[in-house]
Length: 289
Image 1 (spheres, rainbow, N blue to C red):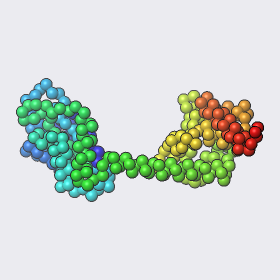
Image 2 (cartoon, helix red, strand yellow; image 1 turned 45 degrees about the horizontal axis):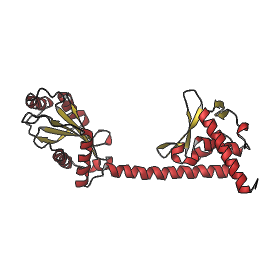
Image 3 (cartoon, rainbow, N blue to C red; image 1 turned 135 degrees about the vertical axis):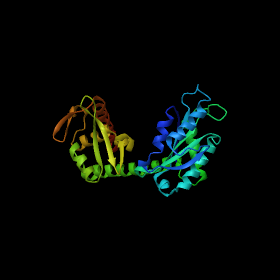
Image 4 (cartoon, rainbow, N blue to C red; image 1 turned 180 degrees about the horizontal axis):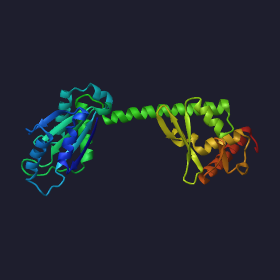
């Protein structure tokens, strides 16, 4: 679950949005309030806020977002409990508050509005509100057995590693079995294996690298693996073509029937990688020894 919080000045507008019937909004929590409409609740907030006119951002606005899977199973009562626990974590039990659930876009989330001004006229300290809101949401999620942000991030990282390994494996199979000599041939071979290779063109309309798109993920070539940087891929294609010396390299490449110039950094990287591959081949075959 994610928790976001900030101080705002436009109380009425936000409460009216939270109460939006078009989003099938429902009140899941309310404390120290009697109003039955956005206008009435806003007026109740205002009466207390008049006790501290120095505080301009006098309402606290929070969004509590369970994961999509958790959100689908949480009842109105459970969302109310979730909100109440969050308020306790944030030490806001003695302030006016109202919360609404929105279930639009298949992503259940709660809009919570709390009067920053207490019944004693003092303003709630909103320092580091974003960080504190997230920590409170993490604690509530753990208490209620919901998925925390850290768990979501860990799952995403595992998925990312899996996808990058698959792209790397497909790349090596293409280079080994197809041995493409041209960039178009490499892109086509990868596409046949469901990996989209996206050339990166800079502002000078020069090729500077590649991105890989696969199973909903999009990575820079070097993010997939350092052996798959633009310079290394182009160097491999050049060697498949029989180019083993940097001076034999051209300054452009054919891409989809058009000639595209190489960026200076990419051209330099290709040359360095060709030299490295040539030296390695010489050592492996014992040339010069």
